[in-house]
Length: 180
Image 1: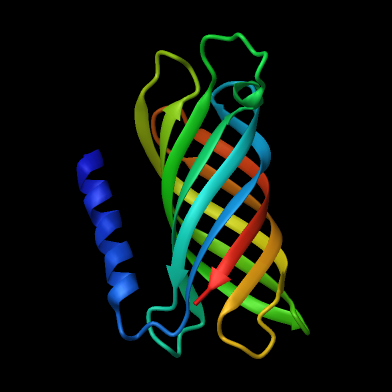
Image 2: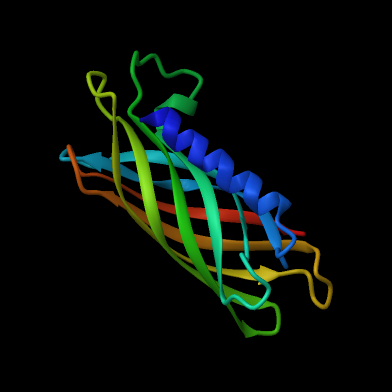
């Protein structure tokens, strides 16, 4: 099952990167903090992610974004921590992103999409679950009148799965994005 998902994700990424219809391809990273849970109390985590996105055709208002999310217990990055196990989730998402400019270089992004999360919150769990992800972001676009350049922003993201243990995560993050 996981191999099929990875094959589909690689196909989508390769299709987006070689398609001549692309008017704007972007890649980015994000990092922040938040919470994870799965029918359990919230666990404080750091979050990180990487993504690639773009418009499927030049006249589209909504772009697609394919990304990877990783969230793990804050203690896992502390050098003096001696715990044997750190709760974490990792997963992939495919979102539709609507981006709009407010004034000048300020913009917002709203996203909604599908989510696949790998549950490692407890040491005896090792399962994948599927659900939805929603996100909001406000930021500054440094491109001005050029097509290529950087965008930064602060965002919120919430992911919720519907099967097994109802895994969910909440993240507040800083995002750095480069548009080609």
